[in-house]
Structure formats: structure tokens, C-alpha cells
Amino acid sequence: MITVYTTGVFDLLHPGHINILRRARAMGDRLIVGVQEDDSVLEQKGRRPIMSCKERMFMLKELPFVDLVLSYHDIDQRKMIKILKPKIIVQGGDWLKTGDRSTVINFARKNNIKIIQFPYTKEVSTTNIKERVYNSLRKIKRENMLDFDLTQRLRIVPISKLLVYESNDPLRTKKLIDRISRSQLFFNPITVGSIDHDGHLLVIDGANRLEALKKLDAKYVPVQIVNYFNPDEVDLQSNEHYLDIKQSIFLKLLRDKKIKIKESKKDSYTMNNNLCYIYTNKKVYNILASKDLIGDVKILNRLVNSYKNIATVTRKSDVGNLLGDSRILIKFKTFNTSDIIEIVTKKMQLESGITWHSIQNSIIHLGMPLSILKEGFKSDKEATKYAKKIIKEKINNQAIRRYFSSVCICDEWEL
Image (cartoon, rainbow, N blue to C red; front, side):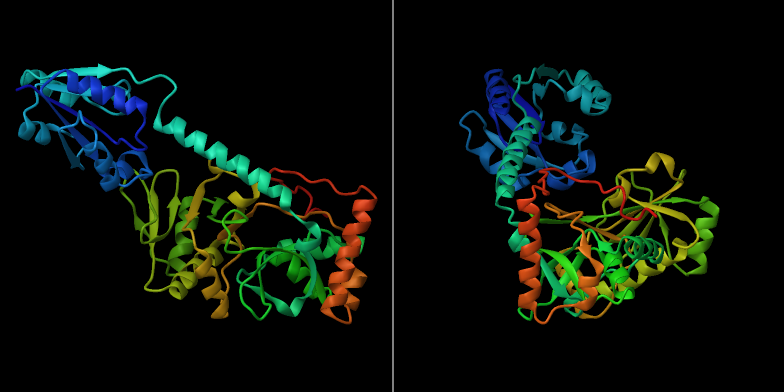
């Protein structure tokens, strides 16, 4: 009996997989398929498959030309080959390009096992399918953006109703105060999300703008309200800090603040139980998480406070990836929305720039007179009526343009 053995991830089973498996079975009397386990794929490719190993194995077992399905973790297949004793090993067209296969090839030669590569079916791959799904979802999201209603989204609310989970940056706040004082206008509404039935609003973007208004004695603030729990509107991402500071000075700062770091020896870095990774020119370090969220907040705040007034700090949320121009990169963990709400309810704050809320739709350059925000309104209803009036005037004057794309604001802190 001729046993044929083939391996792979087999994520999102498609015609290319079927063609290879059918041809492999035709070469022998029995086809055994090895399915790479989820953690093994993560270690090798840096990401997990869309389908779990159990789901992938289930689908393969249902194919009439597959006789046996096994899972494996070790990409060195020699142990598995010794057990199964195949006469033929079949692989896809890019098998030699995805790693060093010399050990398995030499082992197969010594044991008189044929290795045959079949070319992949053109224009069909898991990556191609993922791109098609992504583009389809992207189109749906863009169409849903047409429902963006300025009169419903824009509000003018009392500052007292706003909850802040992130501390402000004093330097940026000062620049905003100077700019608002000169122009007597407040330009970019703060982005907030409704988080309870009492009308409290969480500031998810605009802590510096809010602090500037407070220092200018404003009572009200223009906000754009989003659904904080809808990932299509708000994407809570991990942020990165790029520091222009010597490694020796940076490490001393950490020692002075008694921040414990551990050198990481892995080739791939996943957060798991880590608060952040610190990349230098030569080494990579990590900081372990504490027992609870509040402990994590305290550690990260101490970390940022150790360098924020000494090093020049830029952020991924501000300028994108600057790794090539920086001596130190700090990659923070990703928080979730429940973490942020817990931080607020316990009356704590994260240092500025540890998290990054990416907003699907934003209102910018509104131009609200500072005098109106300082004088306030007789009621929330009057404030809402005034906000709708401004939007209506701008629409009538053709002074609004909607952009269905990401926007980088280049002038918010300019003097």
C-alpha cells in the first residue's frame, strides 16, 4: 500500500487546496493530511489562522479522497514521517520558500521517500480570499458611512458631564490655550462615547482640548458622540512611543523609577502577559503585567513618567511608524473598552498616549466661538438647538465637505 502524506495550514478551505489533495490521493492508495496547530502557526507566521485547528480538521475529514487527518505542532516533520512511513510526500508550490526544508529533504532521500511539489491554483489562495472579504467589508463600511448625520452626532454639552480616562499633555495643552486665546475660536470637537444611563460621556479623543477649555474658564464644549461599543465606529488600538534618547540613559531612568524589565529572547513577540515591549538597537525587553488592571495602570504610568520630560517622544497615533528614526521603541499592550471604563470608574487615569482610539468619522475645523462656550446656555436643550443651528448655517453656506477616509490634522498645536 502506497501512503501519501501532505501537510499545511488549510485555513479557509478553497479550490486550490482541493486540487492538491485530489492529485495527492491519486498518487497512492491512502492520503494522510497533517494540519498545523494554531499555536504553531502563530509561532511560524506571527498570526493565528481564521479557522481553529479543530474546525480545519473537521472539514478535511469530510473530503472523500482524504483517508486520515492528524494535527501537528513541530514543523520538523521527521518524527511524524517515521511513524506514518509514507512513500510520497506532497507539498504546495511555495513550500521551499516558507522555511529551511533541507533537513526534511535529506531525511526523505535517506529513506527513499519521494517529495513532490504541485503548483498552486492560480488566483486562488487563503490570502486572496481574506483580501476579498476585507474589501467587501470595507465597501459595506463606506456605504454605512453615508448614514453619518451631523445634526445627531454633534452636541454642545456641559464640561461637568465628561469623564476622562487619560491625562493631558501639558505642552500640547499650553499650545492649544495659546491658539484658542488668539483666535477666540475652538476648532475641533472632542470625541466622546456614551457609557451609562446617567448621561455621562467618556472622552476618547481630546483630553488636551478639554483641559485647554477648562483653563480658559469654559463651561460647555462641542463634542461628537459615537457608539463606544461599536468597533465599526471606534477602534481601540495599541499605541507606540518612539524615543530619541540613548539606551544607557533610558535604562538608568527605568532603574531610578524601580521599573523591572526582562530581556526577551524570543524571535517573535506577542503580548500575552506583558504590558509592553521595549526595542533598542541591540536588545528587546518586556515588562510583565501585574495581578490586576489598576496595578498595570500604575506600572505603565511610572514608565511613561520616567522619560516624558527628558526624551523627545513621538507616537504612532501622531505620525505613524518612526522606528527607523528612533533609538528606542516602546510598544504598549492593547486595552479593551471594559478596561477603559474600569479605569474611569476607579477615578484613575492613564498617561497620555498609551492608548489610541481610532475614530471612523470625525468632525474637524468647526470654529465654535469661545465666548459662547464660556457664557454657557440656560439648558442642555438650548445648547443642542444652538449646535443644530451652526450645522444648518454651514450646510446652507456650502461650508461642509465630507471625507470618507482617514484624516491627519497638521495644525492643531501650531502657534
